[in-house]
Amino acid sequence: MAKRADPTQWYFYHLERTSLEQAAGALLEKCLQHDKRVLAVSDRVERRASLDQALWTYRDESFLPHGRDEAEGLDPAAQPVLISHNMANQNGAHFCLLMDGADPGLEVDFERCMVMFDGADQATRQIARIQYKKAKELGAVVRYFQQTASNGWKEAGL
Image 1 (cartoon, rainbow, N blue to C red):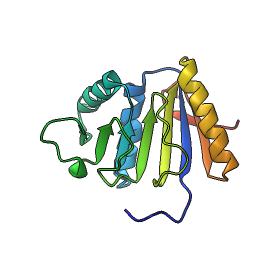
Image 2: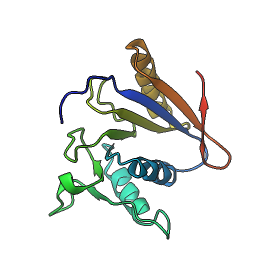
Image 3: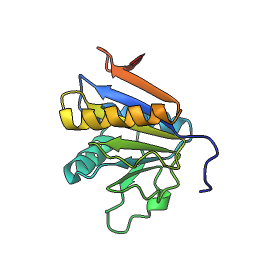
């Protein structure tokens, strides 16, 4: 993938009502509907496993094609959504989903970084605050969304 001319957009998703796994399905489905491949990154093995399981059972009427880069025999490049422990863009992703405080720094080569964090997890919330501040200081497009009572998202200002 060639170096991007436009700066990466940073979208922050503040979870307040559901688990990350429950919320990620709809977000990833929307990305795929717009033909955007996604790299989903967490350094927590249990998160990668639970997200993998949640995407298999996301909705009865839909399937979210995905794979975990640690799965034996998996071709990472063939995965529209690749769940990984690192930022290596093995699937040519347009977007990355950062979970559990994953922090690639601000010099990333994605159209959009989506930071999803649980508001009750103070450590990941603090990392998200720092990422937000740094992205804003660099002049990147930065948007912040809070989870609604219907488990959707509403943009909020900070």
